[in-house]
Image (tube, rainbow, N blue to C red):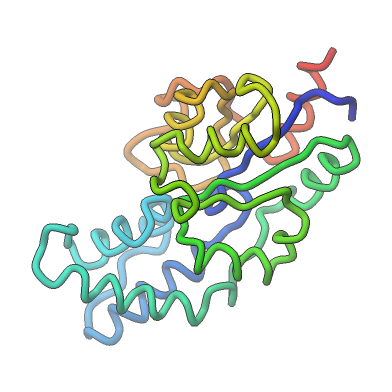
Amino acid sequence: MGRSAAAVLFDLDGTLVDTAPDLVGALYQLLDEMKLGRPDFDKCRNRVSQGARGLIHIGLGMTPEDAGYEEYRQRFLSHYEIRLSAQSALFPGVDELLQQLDQGAVPWGIATNKPHRYAEPLLEDLGLLERCQFLLTPDHVGAGKPDPAMVYRAVEQFEIDPEACWFIGDAEQDVVAGRAAGARTVVANWGYIGDLQTGADWDADYLLDHPLDLIELLSAEAE
């Protein structure tokens, strides 16, 4: 692959790694403790990009404004921390994609709303921590996506102009953050796209159905 991008920035959950089995599993453990029914897995999966807030809402019907929400959130996170990478795995094609980026000397990093205390050990368990140029979380910049702070920081660390950065994610917040920072935006259609909208609604520069489609896109842009 020719040098077709200065750098690629990835979201984590739903883009590089399928974390739904462990996140939904943590929700199911909480619901089992409370002797409540389990929502359909696929419906829960489509809320994973919304983090604990989205999963607790679909499982318990609660929002952060509700009394008792924080207690249940902490119980959910305790379950998740224990099973962090028990069933999580790279999406099919991701490892080959990263290998080809490395072979093409295209640096890549990760910008996720996942708290650092969960993101770093997860990446270490999956062998990605040493491979990526950097990991950025809200703990590093004081704000999560859709705020563009992580994308701005990534551009600084890549030492490139914003338009030379390709930001790929599976949620609207990724597109909003990338666009605000001046990066090219790519929707990962294989991720946790909710059932109430599609990636086509988000005004991204590109929509891809498989990780390796990114290689074809970058190569085409280089011609």
